[in-house]
Length: 204
Image (tube, rainbow, N blue to C red):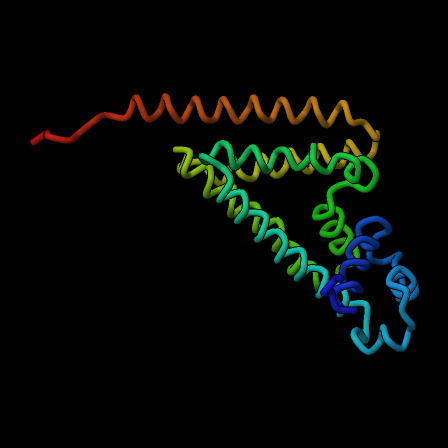
């Protein structure tokens, strides 16, 4: 038996609908119908759509933190953990082809609306940026770790946007292979830099 509360079910349904239909085009009725509860029961938990949006963003932040923590545990080294990020495009390819990236589409929509929650939604990207920067630092690329993190974020967003526009799974797989190749070049470059670094131990 599920131990999810009615509030949890509302947030999960709203999350799905905001992703598939957009925040602006999702109504109270859409969410209530998806959860199959009365409007009165619905209003007991949330009085406004903005309250639901806040709950959805908080849930996404919590889920993203949990995913990053799992990658930290499961990844054998920084490159392996970065590959987990890249492979999101493959794991979620069916939804990405239809709806784009859930983070990018939400942040873009809220920016267009000038919504007050835009800053909170952007924290989702900041979580990924900070985590990727740390992985590139551990990889030996401390000097340009943030630039590499932003490059990978930007490329993954571009892939998601174009894959959604063209509904092209082959394109997703091609781009993921190229991102893996790029990551290998970053790793190889870090190794070369480490070998060139002079050993000053034992000098006067």
